[in-house]
Amino acid sequence: MQTILRITSIRYRWLLGLLTLRVLIDGFNVLISMLIQLGLTVALSGQVNLLVAIFAGMLAAAVVYTGIYFLSGVVTERLKRRVSGDIATDLMANFLQDDATQVPDNGTATNLIVTDTQHIMQFLDAGVLPLVDFGITVFLGVIYVVTQSWQLALMFVAFGGLFAGVSRGLFRQQNQAQTTFIQIDDKHKAFFNDFLANVAVVRNLNVFAYSRQRHADYFQQAAPSMRQMATASGALAGIFNGGVYLAEVLTLMVGFAMLTVTGSSVAGLLGAWNAGVGSILWPFLGLAPTIGFLAQQRTSIDRVLPRLTQQVMPVFSPMKRDYQPDTIKIRGTKVSFHYPQTNREILQHLDFQIHNQGITFLIGANGAGKTTLLKLILNELQPTTGKIEIQGVPAKIKSASLFAFVPQRSVMFTASMTANLLLASQADPTKLPALLQQLQLDRYAADLDQTLQPNQLSPGEQRRLGIIRGIAADRPFIVLDEPFSDIDAVNQQAVMQLLRQEAKKRGVVIITHTFDFVTAADQVLKVGDHHDN
Image 1 (tube, rainbow, N blue to C red):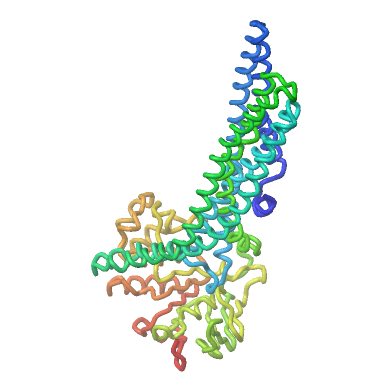
Image 2: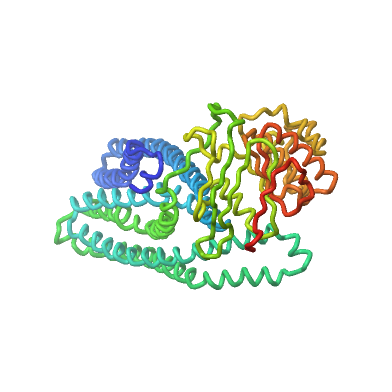
């Protein structure tokens, strides 16, 4: 629990208030046991008026119990949402902080954001609070039973200790199996995302057998872990359920057998037995799913924690420019780069300058290193040797805030056109209709509040909307990765005309593999003349 408190904004005083409510809830069963014992004694003595008062007290206690339980539920749910929001936000910031070689695949990212975050979010009502309830209830139950019969209390504690020892061993088994299972599930989800992205191709080529086989392979890899988890869960359920009922019968038999030895009354015995069953044995029935959840949670914390303990990248917020955009330039000096898994240089001793006005083409064959150079410029990767400097801006300005990046595939959201193009930035939305019309997207210019359906967009429309999104960001540089792919000749000319207009007020960097749109006024930076990637 301390780990979760450290990585979220939950405060100890909030948990203290919640635990106070749980103490009141957990004491209810002991209170009812005491009232039952008192009621039996009063009933046997024929004191009807007092018996009615006892029943009235039990009803009042039930009403108060309901109110406290309601308040506890509200507080628990609010804390869960706070934990979920904190962890999911920090994970997304961590994904943005990672360089291009460390970003998790789709399956791992999905499990971290959804499955692992949900497991940790449930730490209160599925993990900590059940254990707190268990501890408080058993403690109060033992105290009460001891006051009636220490022999009976000893039996209940012995059964409880036996159950606790068994549960500890089964917890370790489940945790080990869960760790193996989730690693396989990461790969399975990554494949499923790839399958959804290629469903049209799979349908067209009729290769369902391949997809089914891949799914079957992942299930087969996960089968040993699933069997281990199922065996441990079954053992927990069987031992606790069967063991508790056996303990109930044995303790009741021993209790009646010891009446003459202890001198206890039947009412006292039944009250103590009821408290022992309800407050000592029955809590063990809920321990099995709690242990199973704690195994999942431990695995999730181990996966999430390394990412949350890293320095989280600050979110770039709109800032007032305290620099002159026309003084900025990018300078690369003797830039070389190779990926960690290979010593083959993708870029070698590259010198270049990119000014904040005009168009710079990064040209090279497929695989020549154009995208790698782009990531170096955007500070997603660091040069193996050499350096890339952003000149003309204060040191406090983050380099990423100077660039608007337009990838080969711009992802749109099911949201309004304005929301898709501005992405909650403070840019001026009044410029959007003209930009849409200039790129032959008139049907979207008429109503910027219409909800966009991404699956109905053609690849060319997605690419042009991505270009408008980059221009609307109003950064000193706009960097475009293969902006002319998936666009017909007419729209290519429209895109190029718009980019030349923008080049009068910002630097435009275009990654491409052809010289089709290069003019004498443009700067050309050739990549991969001597090295193929």
